[in-house]
Image (cartoon, rainbow, N blue to C red; front, side):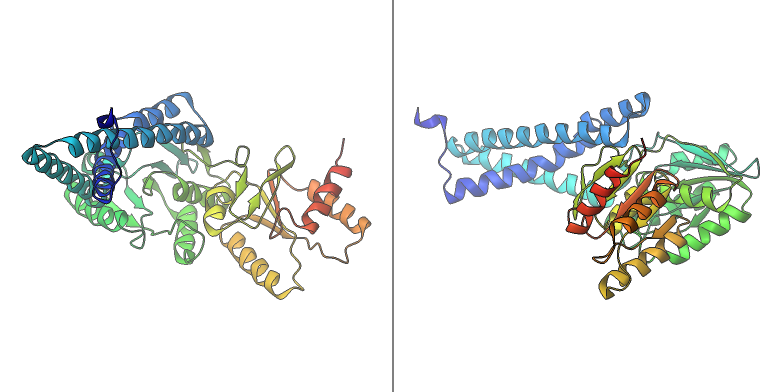
Length: 372
């Protein structure tokens, strides 16, 4: 009976950790590229799942994946720890090490293998320009785009998103040269800051470009959606149809700084979003209006208001600062609520915290004065 379990001495613990690390990368690679996660991605595309639905299923798969890795690692460790065949032990450990090195190499230097490039969406500018959106195009995809008479590939990859994107950018340049298709680089960081020149370039494209363009970031998600949203708002003649997955506040329970509250249909009270949350939830075309309730008389809040105002203007997002302070009367709160209810929905309303005293007062007032 004693051989049914192993004692987690220091050598056995080290062996267990080494085994787990050596298994999680190669099996994880298979899970992403041809296994359950890729299957879920394809099914989500076929059945038009929301991004949140797809993410929820993927999280369940990941939980089972890690349980499987722990159990398999324990089993392998158990067999190795009890084995008296030292040659077998060294052989198995060597094979595990080789699998680890190969999979880490693929994750680090062949990131295009991880991409599902099938999902596409498109928008057009009354026949003058067409913008088609998808994931990173490999050489075969570029050949296909060339045959389909695309004018250019527009890449949103950024060299600061390491380790994958600098490698992908270099390969994309080589593939564009091979296939003879024009490559336009408009590097965007996957958060709101330091994108000023890229945003200006996207607005210029919306106004002036003619032709057929394939636009991509890494996985065909947040940055591609932001690009799409900017050109639609910059040029009202542009019409769209989309299969790109987007993150949606309807199913999001919280942000990093606190809970999200639904005040009524398509009206949400959130904490102050992080840069990544602005990019993923606010600037992706799913929100029409943003209302900031911070008080510009408070120095720290004024800094955030000024930054947000600039960002919202740069990204063509409708934005209002309607201050709520300790001196705000009930009638002023009522007027504030009635003003917000006339704004275009979906609406995101926020202060720094969604659970502060100011937030509680506003949420209660909104429900009190909610139009029946």
